Image (cartoon, rainbow, N blue to C red; front, side, top):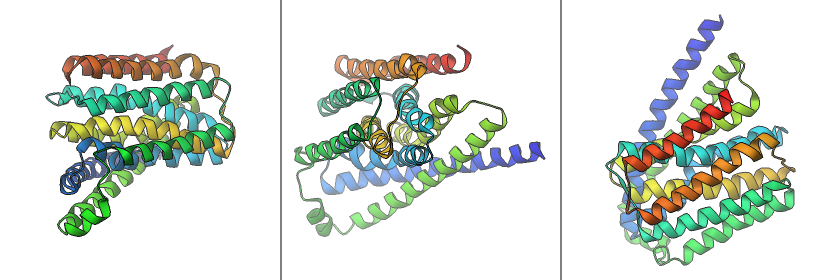
Length: 313
């Protein structure tokens, strides 16, 4: 019976992966079509529409965990997802694609991501209270307002949509693709957690690794698909925007429900690696015109060390 149950979970995992990958392909192409039709840059779409949509699994998992009093998974999911986004997702995208071009506007957003990460780390040092959580959530609305004032986002989107009826197809396909990504991710996360539990993996490790990677699968599929299709603005903007969203909205909303305290292991190991990867990414973006395979391998190596540390040290 146990073998049969595991077989079913593995089948669900594969089906979820198929739905996620197909949804990501539809989503990225549709997002690019919308960006082109509205005259908005790919990086702007990546930072908002794509990033926030692919981060919905993190939001759902962390808030639900906080409501159930499982703060370890709620916080571990955010930190582990941000680590996975840069180390695993962006690393794989850089290795699998010819390279991810870095524009000046993307570097500016990278600085914002690093600043948000630093503030979040300071907040975590003595625990995340509901007040701090509300401050983080308010920070996201401030960030969205900032983007709305950017020259690439100033144009009246509603007005442009009404003038361009052909955008309706792109919007519908974008919604279909997003649904495929989210449903596929949900199936994969559920089956992965049940498989992990059957092998006796601890809750803390599940939160920082399996759940984090599972909820980062939309970013993984979307960024790799975008990079391969040479939609670099979406590929990079997705990661930067997702990390900002995870820290401000996901972690903020979870903390607003009730105080979240990081354990010593998380503060001494996982949080520093999240900060290190954020710093390295900004340095690479500033010094390189393109994130190529060498940079991708470097990011993947740091992520591999993180996984080794969580399971074997």
